[in-house]
Structures are given as structure tokens and as C-alpha cells.
Amino acid sequence: MATSFAFAQDPKHGSEARTVKDADEQQFLFDNDLAMSNISRSMMMTPTDDIGRDFVNVMVPHHRIAIDMARAEIRHGHDDELRQLAKRMVSRQEQEISSLRHARPAAANLMPSTGAEIASLAPS
Image (cartoon, rainbow, N blue to C red; front, side, top):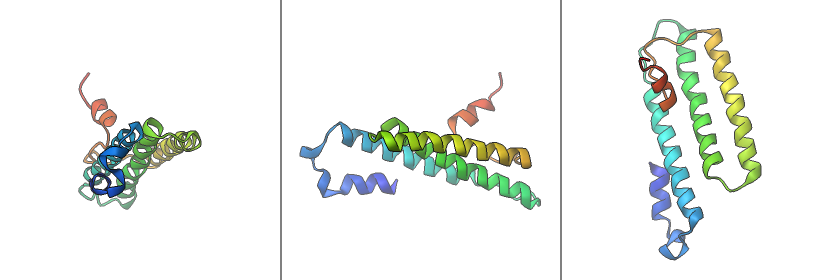
């Protein structure tokens, strides 16, 4: 939330300077704040007495936040080069998550970090 608050308090962004880009910036900052909140919640876990599993349990959310932040750039950014870089980052981070999960499954007490992960746990 700090980034959104700082942006809202920035005198360079007075009402006369509000544009579509400012709205995109606000949404981008909101998406990043949400990603930061999600990682904090998703990394809360009870140790499993298995260092490898605990490592996976904290690293997967670490990579998820990178994905969430890159997706915010893809949705709201205006620089095509950065948006393409963000798309490549999503792909690489998803590969890292897959590698981690194949190396050692996460513990059952790890909270899902994204809406998609939460929805995947719902009964069919």
C-alpha cells in the first residue's frame, strides 16, 4: 500500500496532470500492492521439519510475486519492450515454480498465493 499512498501524495501528480496513464499507474500500483499482500500471506506456514520442503514453500510464493508484478506491467505498461520482457519473465518464473514443485512437493499447509491457485483448490 505504501507505493499507492506515495503516488497519491506526490505533488507532481496534481489534478491537472491526471491522464489515462495516471489511471494505469494507479492500477499498476494497486496490482503490485496486492501482489505484496499476497506474498506475505502465502509465505506464512508452519515449518515441516523438512528444510527442502520449507524452501519450496517459501520460494514458490517468491516466484509468484514476480509473475504477478510482471502481469501488472503487461496489463498496464505502455513500453512495448518492457511488456515483452515481462512476458518472458512470466514464462521463466513459471518454469522455476514447476522445477521447485517437481524437486520437492510443497507442504499441504502452504496457503495458495493467487486467485487462480485458490480457485484450483475449490471442489469441482
